[in-house]
Length: 230
Image 1 (tube, rainbow, N blue to C red):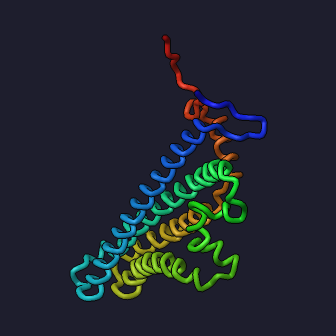
Image 2 (tube, one colour; image 1 turned 90 degrees about the vertical axis):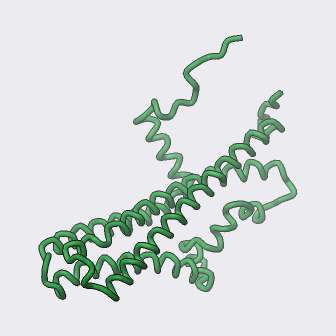
Image 3 (tube, rainbow, N blue to C red; image 1 turned 180 degrees about the vertical axis):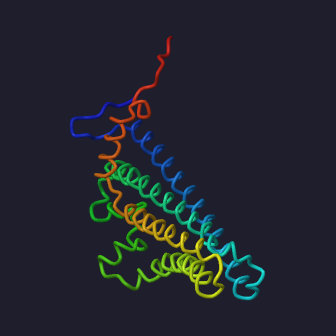
């Protein structure tokens, strides 16, 4: 039997089980997304390494017509990675709410300890905006190197794919010039995408879901469309 909520918002034993199940599902989803993200990073590193090695050691084997589009796969991976980051941030909002509701049943764990138990503990030691805000530069170094290296490799490929055809090979210059414009737009969008990820919070999620519910009510049904009969 489910114990009803009391006036102060406390939860019964059956509700704790439900919350724990939701929490486990959210954590599993985040882990799956992170594994997918690591696979993308592996693809990115492998592609960049092969292209860089061939370009540096055997440049004549690379068709000049393909040079202006060399960065496209890397930029597509970065775009996909940005989407996965946004999904992780969105799920983390739900995880935080569920963790706090579950911790309500353990009164011996007080603030600020209860604020860092769970997924928040990881964010406190590897999330760049938090580390820079708190001036923990030594801890921020690893995250900056990781993401900075990711960006540096893709940016180097992008610049080289435009500079080499125009100023060194002096062929396919029109294509390289057109792709340069495309890359400026793509990089601007990628920067905006990653920056917007860091702004995902509980207030934003509430705002977005209410707006989406009003615009697409069929996608956010709160009740199933059938009734069970005895």
